[in-house]
Amino acid sequence: MDIFAQALEAQSENMGSDLNQEELIQSKLRKKNDVTYTIEPIEGRAAIQRNFVKLPERAPNYSNRHVTLNERFSIIERGYYLKPTELRQGSRPPRVVLVPTSTTSPEDIMAASLAKMEKRQQDAERKLAKSQETSPCASPPRSIDSVSP
Image 1 (tube, one colour):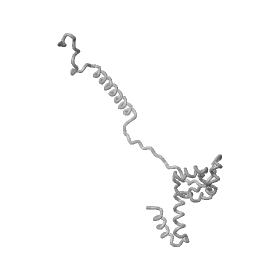
Image 2 (cartoon, rainbow, N blue to C red; image 1 turned 180 degrees about the vertical axis):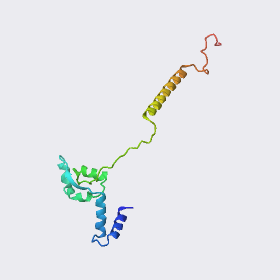
Image 3 (cartoon, rainbow, N blue to C red; image 1 turned 135 degrees about the horizontal axis):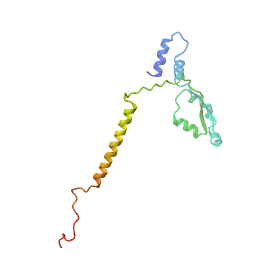
Image 4 (cartoon, one colour; image 1 turned 90 degrees about the horizontal axis):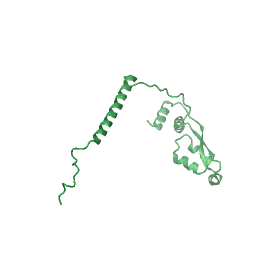
């Protein structure tokens, strides 16, 4: 359910309130993105900032919504940066609980990993020994006497 549908639903629940539909939608949006920005100048960029004097006045356009990377980079290119003034207040950090999914003991895991390592080592030794053996398909070296003129 999107924000506008939630706002309309909340309005139907609050028929007695004096909020109109637009204020209700704005309040829902503020709850989702409670970040307001100010546009601050970057030191040493005065030459560029002269061309964009009115940019700091446009800070409300970037508040209470998702600001894209292109918008952020265009502000930086003009010699300014977005500084958040109100950060969203989290109630508390989420609680993380680790539940073991394996019922095997650590000793069993170590024994299994050692067995795998030994098997890999034996396979590598077997492949090395096999590659050093002469293959039966190879022909024996010819002697000069066996060559006919």
